[in-house]
Length: 614
Image 1: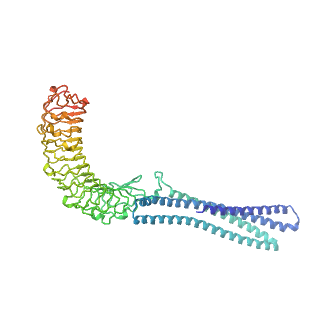
Image 2: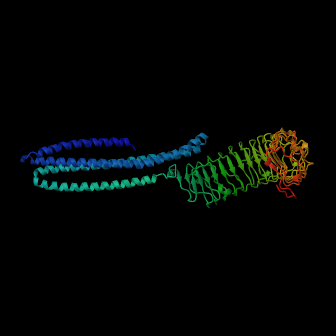
C-alpha cells in the first residue's frame, strides 16, 4: 500500500482542521465580546454568533474524530495486507532458488516454463492483495466523502432554520433546544459505533497476526512452504520420513525446501506424477520395501524429478527398469525380479555413477552388449546374487569397481574385461572359477587393478598372468595345494596382501621361489588353516612383512633361524600367529622370534593336544 500517499492526505486534513480551529477562535472572541455588551438591540445577533461558534466546535470535533478513526483503520489495513504480501514474497523467494538452479544446470524449456508460470501466479496473488488493501482505503474515503456531504446538507438546513429564527424567536428557542438534544444523541451514537468498529478491527488484526505467525520450531514460513503430511510422518530440516507407517499411497506433501523423502517399508502399490508435484526439489528418494511393480510406474512418475540424484527401489517387484530422470547419480534396484536389461533401459542416464542390481534373475544372455553404453560416467556396478555364468559384455570403460560375486561364473574370457581400462576393484568371489577357466590374457588390459577377490571358488593353484599392479589378492577357501614358481615375478613389487587361508597348501607346494616378486612389497601373508608341518623357509626372505598367520596348521617344529635370520636386520614383523598347531612350546629356541617389533604380537596358545600354562 502506498503509505506515503496516505500520509500526505492526512497532513492536508490536519491543516484544514487547523484553519477551522483558527475560525473557531475568532468566533469565540466575538462571542466573548458580544456577551460583554448588554444592549437589548444586539441580543439576537449575540445568540446567532453563539450558535455559529457551537456549530463550528461540533464540526471540528467530528473532523478530528473522523481523522483519528481513519488513521487507526489505515494502520490496520496496512498490517493486515502487509502480512499477506510478505507471505507471497517468501513463496516467490522459495521458487527463485530452484529456478536459478535449473538455469545453471541448463535444464529444458519445459521445466523453466513450469516454474515461471507458478512464479507469475504468485506475483499476481501479491498484486491482488495490495489492490485489496488499496480498495479498502478507497472505501474508507468514499464513506468519509458521504459523511461530509451529509454534514454540508445539515449545515444548509441549519442556515434555513436560522432565517426562520429571525422571524419567530419563540419557535427558534424551542427548535434550538430540540436540535441540541438530537445532535448530542447522534454524537453519542456515532461514538458508540466508532468504538464498536475499533474493537472489531482490533480483533480481526489479532486473528490475522495469529494466522500468519511462524511456529517457533520453524526457520521458514511453515504455512507458505509446507503442508503437514501424514500425522505419523516426521519432518526434520529438509528431510521427510514416512518409513514403516503402513501407507498404501504417497501422502499429499507441499514442501518446496524438502530434498530427502523416505517412504520405505510401506505398502505402496501405485505412484503418479502428481504425488511429487509438491516436492519438486527432491535429490534423495527411498521407496524400498514396498509393493511396487511395473504397472505401478506406468505413468513415469519419477522422470519429472529433475533434481533427483539418489533413488532406492530395493525390495519391490519390478521386472524392468522404469523411466528415470537424467540427473540420477545413484540407482539401487536390488532384490527385485529383473530378468532382462534391454539396450535402451538406461538411456539418458549419463550422470549415473553407482548402479546396484543385486539379487535379481539376470544372466549373460539377458543383458545386451549395448545395455551399459549410455552409462558414460559409471564408476561402480554391483551384480551379486544373480545367475551369470560368465561376465556380461559391453561393460563401460569408466568402470572402477565391479562386484559380481555369488553367481555361477565358470570362466573369464579375454574379451570380457578388455574395455575396463580403469578398473581398480574386481570381486568374483563365491563363483565356480578354476585356473583352466581363466583365459591367458583375461587380465592383460587391467593395468589399474589393485584388488582382486577370487575367494570361495575352485582353484587348485594360484592363477597365472595376474595384473602386474595388483596390491591385494584374496584366494581364501579354495583348494590350492601349490604355488607355481615365479607366479608373482612380473608384479613389479606391488603386491602388499596375499590371503591363502583355508586351502590345501603343504610345505612341498610352497617353495622358496614360489613367492619371488613379492618379497620386497608383501606386508600381510595369511597361510592359516592349511596343511603346513613347519614354518616355510621363504618366510625369512620378506623385507616388509608385518603380519604372518600360520595358525591351525600341523606345525611341530620351529627352527632357530626359521623366522628371524641374523642377517635380516631392521625387521618389520609385528605379529605372528602359531596357535592351534602341534608345537611343544618348551622346545622353541629362545631367540626364534627375537625380530618381532612387539613381544605382544606373538600368539602361541592354545596348541592341539596340549594344555600349557602361560
